[in-house]
Length: 193
Length: 116
Image (tube, rainbow over all chains, first blue to last red):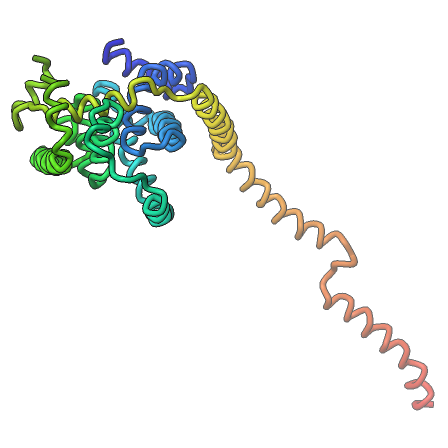
C-alpha cells in the first residue's frame, strides 16, 4: 500500500469511515504493537498502547497530514504512551519488583550454561531493559524498526544530534554490560561472524 | 549491506554487539501479534464516540439555540400578560383601594350618628 493510500484512508476516517480505520490498523498493528512490546516488555500494556494509538488516529484525523508517512507519527504516539506507562509503573511497581527479584533471584549463571542461545538472548534483553527509557527507545527504534536517525528525531521530537548521542551512549552501555559477561563473547563471535 | 546498515555506518561501524542487539530485539518480538479483541475495543470506542459526537452536534445546531432564546422571550412576555388578566395577581394598590372604600363605608353609620 503506498503513501497516498494512507492519505486516502485518513481522509475517509475524517468522514467517519470505520473500515478505513480498520485498513490502517491492519497495516500498522504488528509494527506498533512490537515496538510497544519491546519498550514496555508487557503484552497487556502493548495492547493498550496499540488501542490508544488508533483511537488517536480517529480523534485527530483532522490534524493528520495525509501527504506525510503515518508510521513515524504512530510511533511517536506509541513512544509517548509507553513513556507514560513506564513512568506510572516505575512509581508504583518497580520497588516491589526489585524486592521480589532480590529474594527469588536465581544464582549467577555459570559460563558453561550461558553458551545456550536462550540464555544469551536473556542476557542481552536484560542489558537492554536496564537502559534508561530514552536510551532504550532509541535502541528499539534503530535496531528493531530500522528507522533512520532523522526518523527517530521526528518520533522523539528532538534534534538528530541528540539521537546520535543517545544511540552512542546506549551502545556504549550495552557493550560494557555485555563485556562484563566476557565468557559470552567468544560464543557471540562464533554465532554472528 | 542493507540501507539500515549503511545508515548505521554514518554513526559508527556495525559490529558484533550491534548484530547481537538487533538479533535479540527482533527475536524477542518476532512471533508476537496483538489479540483480536484490541480491534473490537477500538471499534466499540469509535462507535460510542461517533454517537456522542453526533448527539453533541445536534445540540449545538444554531436553530436549536435560537429556539431556546425564543422560548425564553415567550415566557417573559406571557407572564406579564397572564398577570394582568388574573385578578388574583392584580396590583396591590387596587386591592388596598377596595379595602379602603369598604372601611370608609362601614364608618358612615357612626358618622351619621355623631352628627345627629
